[in-house]
Length: 263
Length: 62
Length: 177
Image (cartoon, rainbow over all chains, first blue to last red):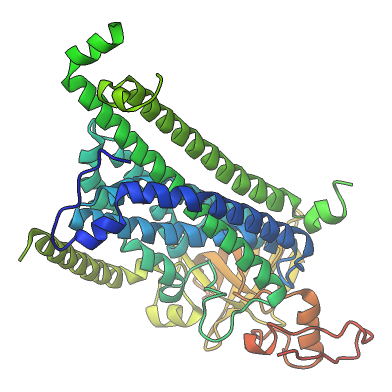
């Protein structure tokens, strides 16, 4: 893909060379089908395993199967935000357009996984805790995460010139990054209705292998799905930018364009 | 057989199945929307490049 | 210093400032961030009767009593304990499925002048252990897990396979780790 600004000589050269949109289009085009295939198959295997083969839980019965959607979605919601924050940081400091475009691409994916996490959590909370929702530190901080994603999407689209939206959106994303450790440690720092972490706790995971295995397979599947969607949306963002550049070029020489069209 | 065995989910079918339906549904919806956006952008670029006078010279038979 | 280097420092300094401000704010508002108080907290804090609060802990084994009121509603009383202190709770209404002795609960309501807790809502709080019922039974039969106590360390059971060939009640379990 040409029409891209040439790499600026100097310090950022290596980064610019690796993150060159043309290279990215070739690389992502080759990788994307495999990522999508891996994500789809691992998700289907993991969810099917969780629904059919995994045992029910000693205290939660069959509602534990909601975990196979809820927990991977929660991991993607948080991991996605870390990705968004890194892209925003690179975009803000090194002004690399690919970082801005990928941040725009990641935000809606993170928002969808956060929504899944919140909805399935609610559906799990009602039968087990006895309530759809409480304002404890964990649930509230995840809701804040959802609104941060929505705010990022809104801000990214708030400007007529999409490129101008990148900086304020990146600043919002970085400010919101303080929420990620709050989500992670809320269950340890404060009394919450939500139980503490099972898989990543110190010592051994508090989950029997028969329940842990489908959980990890689904999480891998969701991770690949997330990555595939992020690549796809970033590719779309690069093409949209190219289309805007072509439109601008055409607007700059209306006489020539009109002449060729009518000729 | 909806009210017994596998589909009953031990009496919690009303919570388990909607979780899977909503989770899978939202991911599929996002994937479809993302794919459509990609196709639209790709077609835009192809159309604009075909229309662009500078491009046209370099391409065969348009 | 290049412009990129300068921007890097500005962003890092902003992040540091923001992180510090957040940490201070969260520490200052800690009392509002906890979802519930433990019975020990209550004893230390001198909360007046009638104020709406939440308390949480484990339902003390053997403390649950149920009665039916005149209009046919279930009246339930139990003690909530955090090990160090405990508090009697009364509640009228429907309990979550998970409610049982030894189970975590969070009750919302207020202290009465008599020093008990009158709950308007009772929520169940489960721990972070997930295992098949057969494994839980095997642990309890073999004496690794006392009923009403928290589950034993996960390393002891998260790869445990209850011996399917053993007749139920024989109380043997094979450790596979």
